[in-house]
Each structure stands twice: as C-alpha cells, then as structure tokens.
Image (cartoon, rainbow, N blue to C red; front, side, top):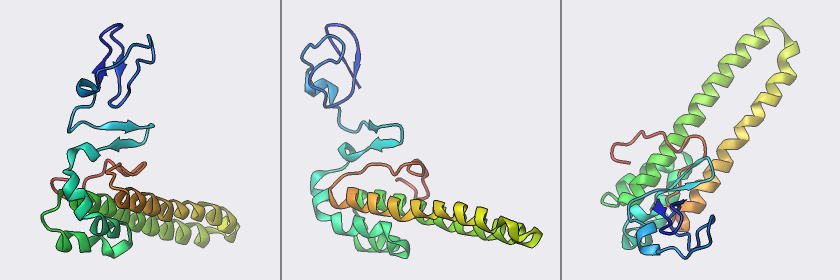
Length: 164
C-alpha cells in the first residue's frame, strides 16, 4: 500500500489520484511487486506475485483446478508452475469445502428427519447453500483463464497445499 506524499492518506496499488486530496500518485511506489490488493472484503488479488510468462503458459492447467477431481491435473501437467499450483490450492480448498458441506448436510438431514418429517422443507432451504460451490467454481475458473490470481470468497484463505 502506498502513501500520498501530499496528505499522508494510504493508497491502494494502482490508484493514480489520491481520494482525499486529489494529488497525483507515483504508481511505481504504490504498486509494489509481490503485494496483495484487497478485493472488497473477500480476498486478495495475488497476480503480481507470479511471472507473466508462467501465467500465459499455464492458464489452461490452472483453469482445470476448479472442476472437482481435475484439481490434480495442474499438479502433474504443470509441475514447475507456481501460478497453476496456486490455483490448484484454491481448487483443492473448494473441493474440500464441498465435500465437508455434503457430509455435514447428510448428517444433519438424517438426524432431523429421524426426529420429524416436519424438517423436510427447512432442509430443502438449507440445501440451496450448495449453489455457492458451482458459483465459486465458475469464479475461480474465470480468474484462472483471465490470468488473475484472486482468492475465492470465503474459502480463499484456506491453504491445503504447501507453498500456495
């Protein structure tokens, strides 16, 4: 994060004009390589940490990370790619979260329905949370194919692969 020379306000990388005083910002100092850029309150864009050649070469492998068990493909297809490995880590976190959700939902449904069938419609509503997983998958794949390394909302900070 940079600082405005005129007023001292913290400025995010890539911002060209200070939001407080309107002074021009020196982009070289405000856009440091290897830093993260917050995206709303969900996660960070870590694209600057990766080599542009690595990104261009391994977009397809990184995209496969978000489609279930295909998460293993980038780990073998692009062994030396930090970009593909980072996306594989995000895809693995997504896969793990979906498996945990499925197990928890099944246990909850079994317990509640064994007590009373009156919980049936409540469980149907809870089941709608499953829609988050395909949406996160599409979001991750879109980021990968567009050459971005942005953390997925909610689960993006989970690191299941070493070095990701």
